[in-house]
Picture 1: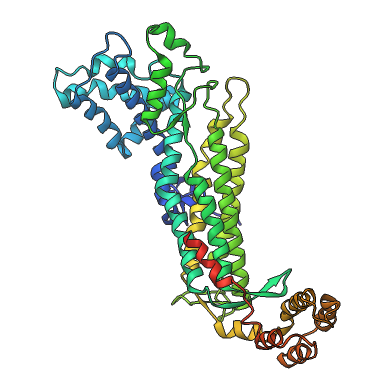
Picture 2 (picture 1 turned 45 degrees about the vertical axis):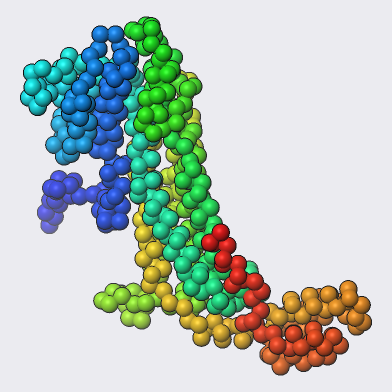
Length: 479
């Protein structure tokens, strides 16, 4: 029997997304499209070309070039402001002929100059300045500035606000549970108690530290020609101070000027930024795995979502999917960011094209991170604390008081109290590999011969009360 021909999903209209960021998870990452998509890249290129044209004419850099009127400047900037679906399609049509993306942008903008009389009247000088579009530029002059603007926008307007909100939400939880005693586990074994708030504060503090680094990262740019020498600039217009023209233009865009490059801007700033974001990802991954473990242990209870299913066969399940999803996406994001950082710092001699393909994956790298942030935030909002379970855990592990008892014995020995020999070894013999009750511990303390005030202090101590300064440490989040 012959099987019927299968419909090719590649031919379905509208197109089906190849990757999950543009399919299943599109709502969570959609804000990045305005910054890191191919269309956003082309809009940024148009923006840079427009601003370069305005810069050259407003400063009289090229002799004979007219000064543009306010209306003409506004017309040019409106080309960027109104860049949308029709313009994306037009650029794609031009590129099919040029087979060069940046050259297509140049021709696109020249079309707008030629069309200016229709909007501004026959007296406009814009049709006469067409040869100042892309003047003395190599493609990388436009691309490096475009990517810097795109990445800066994506980080400062989308990723950083979301990441900051997440860190703030963790800090709120830390304050809320600052006094909640928690049995600590080191190496997976019962250890000196802490508070849930203090442990969350550690993670919030780590996340915020990385965010401060990211907020302070620089975005560099250059515009200096085919091999970074201003060769064409100097020959075409020898009287201009081209380094000053370049510096002021890059700084006008809100970027840091890089005075020494090959054909490409060296991308070191990108490597630095991506390393910082990747490190944030890994701290967030640590938070996700810790919260997952607390859920598994019962510290956190997940609040069920009406109608949601945790398992196709086990009705009782409420799975920690938000944190598991976050783990996977953070790993994907960091892998991409690590690759970007390691690849972009190398370019053969004065130029090769490895960076061109690599930089087209900046969007997915930030997309997976943003998706993880969204999942963690949603997951944290669906948690409640089982205080009764935490109290039971602490009450079942009186052996953790071996640490303060032997430390008090050491202090007493230093103060001259007799009978305090080998405190560590004596508590090790009492507690190692054993579960003690409150009575066991108090009986041991009573027989030590400690000064009355010390003995009384230890007799009143419980695992739940043995949290040191944990609750107070949370206040460091407000510093």
